[in-house]
Amino acid sequence: MTTPRPRPEILTISPYIGGESTLPGINRTIKLSSNEGAFGVPPGAQQAIRHAAEEAYRYPDGGADALREAIGRRWGLNPTRIVCGAGSDDLIYQLCLAYGGPGRDIVMSAHGFAIYQIAGTYAGSRVIKVPERNLTADVDAMLAAVSPSTRLMFLANPNNPTGSMLSAADVTRLRQELAPEVLLVIDSAYAEYVTRGDYEPGIKLVDATGNTVMTRTFSKVFGLGGMRIGWCYAPPDVVDVLNRIRAPFNVSVAAQVAAIAALAEPGWVEKGRDHNAEWRPKLAAGLEAAGIKVWPSEGNFVLADFGTPALAEAADIFLRERGIIVRGVRGYGLPHCLRITVGLAEEVEAAVAGLTAFMRGRRG
Ligand SMILES: *Cc1c(COP(=O)(O)O)cnc(C)c1O
Image (cartoon, rainbow, N blue to C red; front, side, top):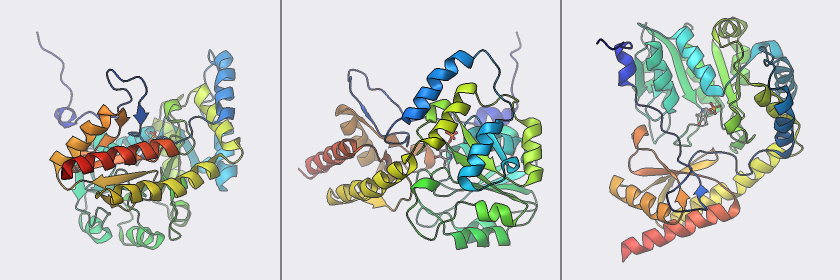
């Protein structure tokens, strides 16, 4: 019997491994492995999801018109330049399928978000990973990696899992020096958490150029990772392309109303941002006091650097025994590191206490 075979490059893709959420034999786990917002689902969004139950027999609005209008109002954007997706991952896939493909290379930084490589390879592109400098995308190296075959470049800003960020000036220079036929996708999933003043999520560049896209998500500060909803702000030509190829009902009824309600939740983003601005430095300081190197982060997580893969792995096991799940980032070429999400105050304190005990035990 002959078994059907996919295109050969498909089998070179390693499946994406999400953050684990349960540990065998432990009832109460602290999950700091997926960068979800610390405060759960906004109450108004919970109510909207319950109401949506009655409407779920109907197809959703394929254009997500009400949601795009709400997003447009919130960020001062023209709704006709917005496309919604089943998470921003969905839009990343569609961009790769439309603008990538055989003979059309994709450039990303060495420790950039894993989905770019998966989606790019799926599309048939060669995905080129560019060495970073201090775990930060290197603008000159990214530009040098571009060839006449390059059609797409992905930049997560801030990046996951490193937490590093490029300034508005650096991203602008990247765009200016990048060939115009290369679509630059700025993934600003963590924009709401950035505290540095020299940041710009990409809106200005999308407005100023015809070849830049910004992607955003409801999965982080808005607390709706489980609903799968993201969006992009793009030039009219790119919007037209995405609307031709995306699944016509890619955002569910429940996801649309939940996102609208999350946008309307009074003070929600401010609460998430303020909490993160307080507890991200506390998490970093606690780990550093325990003798662990922490990379600077502008996201709702930090990258803890144990120096060796063995020590990082032992720390991971030690935390698991205490019911704390963080994220190994071996797949990102960082086997000596663990990524830790900024959870609630007591969750951060538990992670710091756990790793302090771990490091003390190491010193004997
Ligand atoms: C979490 C994350 C996303 C969000 O993906 P969704 O599909 O919207 O849940 C996108 N990009 C990066 C870099 C992320 O870390």
